[in-house]
Length: 82
Image (cartoon, rainbow, N blue to C red):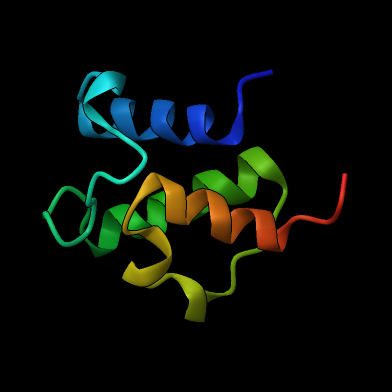
């Protein structure tokens, strides 16, 4: 199974119609305008469905989703130990 970062990057590449290689772990997603508020909600929905986590509405904020690295860090804090 691909890593969490690879799964997030793959989703973003498809959603943004970009090559996965163009999305580095520290690529700014929100501040650069790649993701808007609607895209943040879609990303949160993807993460919930794909990973089985629950993302509270109050957490769908740019600071949690600014980069792939931040997304991975945030999701790992939500997931129970495996």
